Length: 193
Image (cartoon, rainbow, N blue to C red; front, side, top):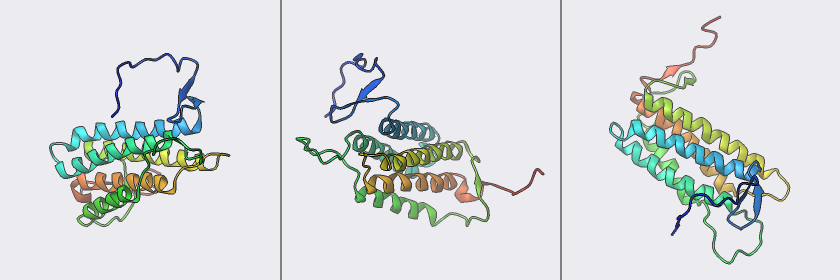
């Protein structure tokens, strides 16, 4: 159980923060950026849920599960798997979590109108908020992939699969809250030339 009695510790005043291993890193470190961006995506989902709670309770429940999983993902990223013994079992994203998101995507996607163009970010307030969350999740994914290329760094394949599915889910959910795609705002190539 997490227990937070004091919010400020002053340990970050030097521009560093602690990983779950106790190691200190600069707050600008790519790993910190990765899980910070996961946190940002989670906050965007929280804003989207303001619009989904009453009108789309099934989607709202799916979003609630994803928010919890995103904390798991942040914990996964905060404890690098460098092969060193930790003395405890770190929290890791699992295939079960990714599979659940895929099932939710399939459930929502079956009722959507087929796409005939790219979708612009908008439509209903819920859809716009979900599209914003999707773009932040995609940025988190790019940072995580970039982190895998850094010397000595590791991000699990499942963690990357999970965030990829979350952004796919957010796209499908945005279309679902847009009257199953009927209220989507479609891109018209060259419309304003």
